[in-house]
Length: 131
Image (cartoon, helix red, strand yellow):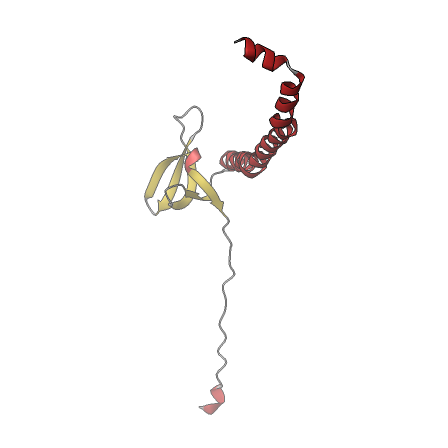
């Protein structure tokens, strides 16, 4: 035990321990772990927060008459909000004529833009002069 204490106090043992420890590598490791954390934040956490915020805004913006897609894949028009639900989290969705379902607002995945197309009038390009 005395030799261990003497060896740990000798200047050559201290110099050997200092050279083998690699003090710069500890700083590099800390920098590397910090860089990994920053990359994880920008690649995973930040985009997920943005998607969650967009989903919340979509759910809040849903109005009666909007065509929506539910998480189950069903597509229909929002006809009403449930009057019995105090929080307003339940919507009535009209899927087809006479088919209405209750769904949670959080089940709405996206709002579908309804394009009103003008009817295309096909013109008859055939010559009637042949007759």
